[in-house]
Length: 473
Image (cartoon, helix red, strand yellow):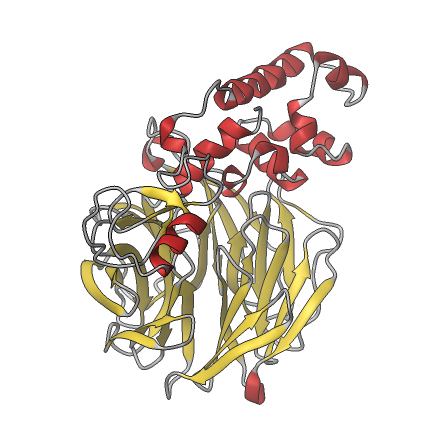
C-alpha cells in the first residue's frame, strides 16, 4: 500500500516540479520560488524559499550527491544553487533569451542540459561555467530532456510529439516520430541498464497529451547506431499525463495526470499497483527519493504530497539498493552521504545530531561508545548500541584480506578504481581497456575474439563492491 505522510502547502501558486536528494526535497512553482525541505521531518531549511528567478520556475534537479540544485524558468535562466548555504553559484542565460522549460544534469559529469520554448537546446559545463554547444532541435517547445544513466546520450521530447536521442555533440542518433500524439510532457530513464556483446539497453518512460504513459527500450549499438522500441503502453489515467518517474531501483514507475490522479505501476510488467486521489487539481510533478521508500507529487492545487511506499511494493528481500553515497568509498563520504546512510539504516532521529557535529565518512568509521556518549551526547544506551552495531556491520561489509579476483583488472591485474564493462562482457579498468582499444586492438583481451563495439559502460555495482572492500584496507 501507499500511505500519505504529509502535505506541504507553502507555495502560493501551482507546483511545477519536485526533486529529491539523499536528504532534501525541492519543489518549484509558478510563484517564482523554490522551497527546500529536510526529509528528516519535512521542515523547511533556514534559507528556503530560494528567490532568484523573475518568473515561474518550471523544473528543478539535484546533483547526485545533493550538493547543488539546478532550476530553470521562463526568465531564460538556469540557476545553480549551493545546498549548503542557499546561495547562487552560477547563472546561465539561454542563448536567444527564450524561456527555459526543462533542465537535466548528467549523472557522471558536469554537463547540464536545458531545453527552451523556441526549440533550442543548450549544453553547459557548470564547473567551467561555459556553454559547450547550443542547437535548434525542433520547431516546437522542448518540454522534456534527460540523460541516460551512463551520461553518454540524452533524449528530448517536445510539443510536436517526437522523442529524439542525441549524443553529447548534439548529433541526432534516432527520432521516434509522434511518440505521443499532441505532445510529450515528460521523460525519465530508469537508473539501471543492460549490456551484452553488441548493445546497451536502457528503459525510458515518457508521457504526454495523449493520456498515455509509455515505456521504451532505447538500444545503442556501437558509437552511432541507436533505436527505440515500445515495451508498454499504460493507460491507467483518463486525461493527459504530465509527469513520470522511475524509482531508484527501477522497480516502480509513477505518473501524474490532468485527471488529478497519481498512478503507481510495476515497471517490469506494467501492472497498475495503485491509483491515488489526494490532489484537487492537475498533478504536474512526481519524484522518488533515492534513499527512502518515499515519493512526492506536486499539483496545480499548490500542494505537494509526500507518500510512503510499502516494502512489498519496492521489492522486499531484493537486497540493499544502490544510492548516491554507495558509489563512493566510505572514507570519501561527505556529511550528506552519512546523513543518507542514517536514513537508509532507520536512524533518522540522529540526523540533527550528526549534522551539528559534522560527521563525515572517516569520522563515522571511528565512532565508539565513548564518543557517542561524550562528544555526540547521545543519552540512550540502546540508541548508542544500535549505531555501533550498524557501523560494525558496515565495517564487516568492507573487510577483506586479499583482493577478490573479480576486483582485479584482467589487463593490469590491479584493483580497479573505475571498472567498466566492455562488449565482451568482462569488466576492466577504464584507462586500461581504452588504451587497449585506442591501440587499434579490436579484439577482446580475454577471448581474443573481435569486439563488436568499442563502447564501454560503467560497472556501478562492481565499483561499489570494490569501494566497500577498499575503505578499510
